[in-house]
Amino acid sequence: MTTQDLKLFEAFGIEMEYMLVDRDTLNVRPVADTVLAILAGGQLVSDFESGPITWSNELALHVLELKTTLPAKKIRSLPSQFEKAMVDLRPVLDRLNVRLLPTAMHPWMNPAIETILWPHENYEIYQAYDRIFDCKSHGWANVQSVHLNLPFDGDEEFSRLHAAVRLVLPILPALTASSPIVDGQYTGKMDTRMQYYADHCRAMGSLTGQVIPESIFDEATYRREVFEPIQRDVKVHDPSGVLQIDFLNARGAIARFDRGSVELRVMDVQEYPGADVAICAAVTAVVKWLVEENVSSLEAQQAIGTASLRAVLDDVSTDAENAVISDSAYLATLGVNRASCRGRELWSELLHRVRRDDSSLATLYAPLEVIENEGTLATRICKSLGDDFSQEDLHNVYDQLADCLDQWEPFQP
Image 1 (cartoon, rainbow, N blue to C red):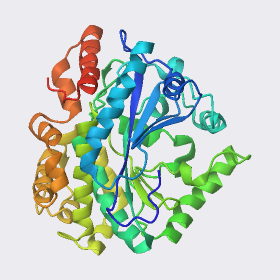
Image 2 (image 1 turned 90 degrees about the vertical axis):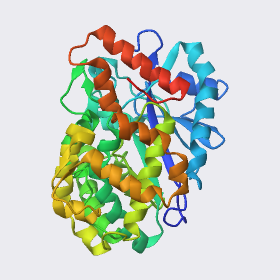
Image 3 (image 1 turned 45 degrees about the horizontal axis):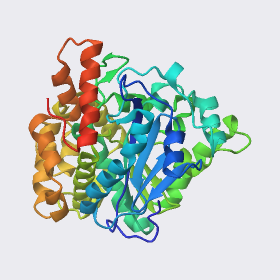
Image 4 (image 1 turned 30 degrees about the vertical axis):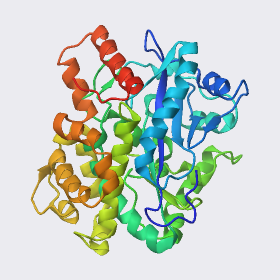
């Protein structure tokens, strides 16, 4: 998917990851290659294009990615396109007795013994990752997310977009957290995926940095301060040059100068794509509102430090919508002139402001009302399970979550 030659907010690219699991046990099933081959009429492929939507492989054989084939000019049309893709896939899944499981982390998968890496096209890349980072771990094999791609054209647009995106990243888990359970138990974090994501490249820390990208606002500086350290570090681990530098950047938002976009990665996948698209529409509207300098100048936005933003991200990843955000300078750049507020209060205020002037967001708003009224998906999962739950309880709740994906409806305890 490329956004080259598109201006700010002229189009959107959305990618979602789902787990393939056994229909009866909900254990992961490494059959992504079989699913794609059936879709392609028996031919072994790494992606299958079905009009505006494409299915493709990921690093692990139990994960499928669903994405826009090309950047979409109208975000409001995406829910129906994703829904049709899901309906078209269902006969293939039924044939294999598997289903798609939403949420950002499988609640009881053991990646050390259940992970099988993609063994086909580009397998040498995955083998290199595995050799360096040990991909048979939660941080690599059990982290399903949504990526939102927003276009820019040139340094001036990149500067404004990157400044706004950095401000929005830390509060995304207050909308999107869906991973409170790993290894069959509560982790103490509503967005556990972010904990694993922040640490998954520990063997080469230059890939993730502080997760929140640095205060860099032009391509030359970005290449010097982000790509060059990655290039130096990777040579030690990959002397044959299998891994490409532009694809190694693993920050929470990455600059893709090769295709003219910034890709946001700090979003857990939801229970059905309609909710993910609504969230992407909301995030885009808030980023656009910041780019237009409605409540803070570009200079003020650029001045917020990476460490401050990372501290907010850590708090919000732990408590999601209930996190207390007490960085008043940060809040001021978002137009909130208070000493502190909770994540849900902040999003309520932001969405109230942008919804009035964004017809697409107004059309897609229903899933956001569920989050506003009943909490993030992580909160709703915890409410359903209660303080003390059995494996049977866990299976039943996640079976209901898979039903939400099939039936295209929100999860409500």
